[in-house]
Image (cartoon, rainbow, N blue to C red; front, side):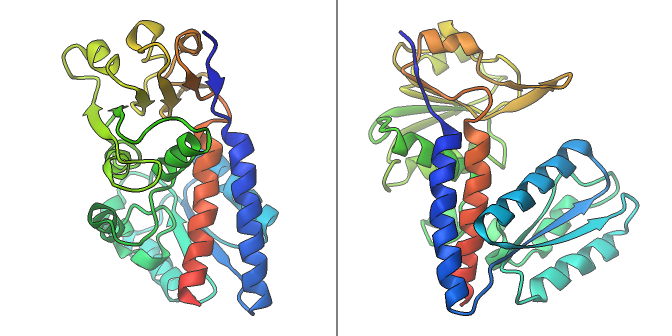
Length: 284
């Protein structure tokens, strides 16, 4: 069996086209969509990721606002920038790029973000909205994974999904989202992690497996039910090579699989753009 690739690049291009159209309609109505980023320090991966977000904004017509602060910025100075972005009507959504340098309180900073401008969808208010099934920005990576599965006609409703990883950015919100009674979801969801007994046996029960543990090659062919859909959402670095949680040989067993590059990542960035334009539509 050779798995069908879940092409995130191709689907993300369609989402960007949709966002471009919505941005143009807002501009016609006199609204210029604005997305802000706050970067503290000079962490290489964070800097590259922020640069990609601004390039994405340019592609779809969203105005970018950026604040680059030194690594030794004080908590009060950082929170003052957050407050300025909150108050700026031209910035409809923004994010504080994580991780922050040692000595800064990430929780305090994230709590200071206006929930209605939280483009990542990870503010406690928005996670609460997710739990309640209320409208609000969805966490970008979980939303992108659901869209990727749905667009490729992967059966999810009524199926057993196994999520490996319980992190705030992917595992926990994804499990909530997939269990909800909404299109592309409504599944039975099991959340596991690398510390559970018989991890392989539990993962092998999944009709859909999402690996979000950040451990290269964690999921191997013997852990996968033949024909299952396998999504590599967790990544880690080996030198300069970005590695997936899913070993590439899993493609010999799976029915669908994300590529090592071009799977979940492009969808995360596309969902961030969609969250930004939705914030602008709500505020206008």
